[in-house]
Amino acid sequence: MTHEYDVVIIGAGGAGLYAALEASKQAKTAVISKLYPIRSHTGAAQGGIGAALGNVEEDKPEWHAFDTVKGGDYLTDQKAACLLADEAVQAVYDLENRGLPFSRTPEGRIDQRRFGGHTRNFGEAPVRRACYAADRTGHMILQTLYQQCIKNKVSFFNEFHAVDVLIEGHKCAGLVVIELATGELHVFKSKAVLFATGGFGRMFGITSNAHANTGDGPALVVRRGVPLEDMEFFQFHPTGIRGMGILITEGVRGEGGILRNNKNERFMEHYAPKLLDLAPRDMIARAIITEIRGGKGIKGDAAIDDYVHLDATHLGRDVIEAKLPEIADFSRTYLGIDPAEKPMPVHPTAHYAMGGIPTDMHGRVFADGEGNLFEGLYAAGECACVSVHGANRLGTNSLVDLIVFGRRAGLHIADFVKKAELSPLSGDATEPAQTIVNRLFNGKNGPQPEELRKTMQDLMMQDVGIYRGGKEMADAVKKLEDLRQEYREVRVKDRNKSFNTNLLEILELGNLLDLAYISATCALNRTEIRGAHAREDYPERDDDNWLKHTLAWLRDDRVEIDYSTVDVSVWEPKPRKY
Ligand SMILES: Cc1cc2nc3c(=O)[nH]c(=O)nc-3n(C[C@H](O)[C@H](O)[C@H](O)COP(=O)(O)OP(=O)(O)OC[C@H]3O[C@@H](n4cnc5c(N)ncnc54)[C@H](O)[C@@H]3O)c2cc1C
Image (cartoon, rainbow, N blue to C red):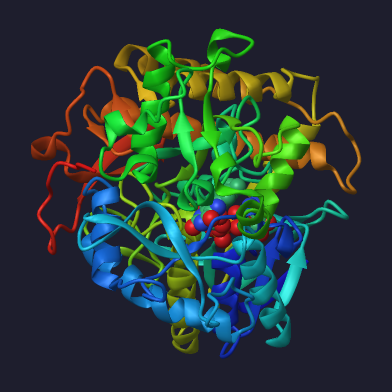
């Protein structure tokens, strides 16, 4: 079946829904989502959305922008960071006006709490910048945006799974999608396509990410000649539930929670004397691993299972139940621990992709490092790289990114489609996708996809995780090449067309394998320590050689690397001290 729209948006998380909200005011808009919209991972965001409202203490967008640049270890594009911080303020008020039930101060203003790396006056001390709705901020954002989209008559295609994007030359003409209920392939012809497919934490064994976070968007576009930016930078959040990776929000430390080692020491005093437990995530994740390696972790069941404590007992039951109810629930459910009485066992967990599809500040996708663009192709949210997060994202800055750049992309698209035409499609647009599906259904059973997935996740965890070594990563790249070869022999077991989740999981595994291969190759290539990319064999940041973005293409099934310039036009890069 073929559909025609002005705009097709893939993804119904915060970025996709905000873009849809703006685009649908002027253009015929469809949102395609493999999940029901409010099950998107945005709904799992707990802690907050950063904006310099200055509601509880003095704050300025300029300070927010500086923190974002410094937090990103100066790989952040600085004008984009300034725009993010400036527009964050209005974006939060827009959400409030659309009905988002923020937590309030006694005077009735939006309340704000502390979060890692967010400071007053260019690094002086932590500042209260994170606006929040208890620890259900993302959930509230999704609910608010979804109801507004319904009001605007956006057409939703839920449980439709994008499998191919139609790009000819530098022009995007639409999309090919599988309908889960029937197994049928649909073609969506459109003047503009926006990717808002979220992150890909599932390439790691221990992650805070939902099962659906498999990087479908970046994988589809990279196969069609689009480069991916800064894929070597993947953030580990310091406080995942030990062994499971489920997130304990940084909001706990924002409210005053403290990390402690097996001697009950507040070890962050040694690593970030000023910001302590509210230093940026890359530094805290490394500090935890250093403590554990130095024998100061708390003994787990196996060597890799050692952990540290996140202590919130001194906050008191009232604060915990009012401001962190979800976390208290997680802790009781998954750990059998009441956080008002005992500290929670935590370990870093793979959390956020700083890299992704390269875009300008309107969400338009770059074709190279020279500033050339694809026509009609857009990306926003975690799958995109603007780049405001540089080498390490600050907490609360992803939700801002979704809202600010989702909105900007939606506005630009609405304007673009007024002048654009639908492109004619040459031949049968479904053919490449159909060939892949046919291959997966035909022939003998090959390797088990679960085993390939586990091997990839273990490899990424061990060799392309928090600390990285050249030799180990070279080995990982080689093994990922082999895994991608083996993947070609994988076959679908479930022969049904209807609700064939087996087929979709195999397609998702293929996407993860491609992104893991690209990420590991880029990580091996970058010989320095910067933000979340910590090379043990190159333990210095190297601005002379590496103050540049990586761009990676998949050509003839090999990764090809080029670079683009980092915008450092506002603040001169300095060593990071907290
Ligand atoms: C547990 C957790 C807590 C977090 N807490 C915070 C926080 O407090 N503050 C903060 O700033 N950030 C937080 N983050 C990060 C932030 O939530 C995410 O980066 C952000 O929500 C991603 O939003 P998105 O719109 O890009 O994508 P998502 O919300 O992940 O949505 C992706 C959408 O794409 C669709 N999709 C994907 N692939 C396909 C396909 N092939 N076909 C069709 N549809 C597809 C999905 O159905 C979904 O609708 C948190 C992340 C996690 C995991």
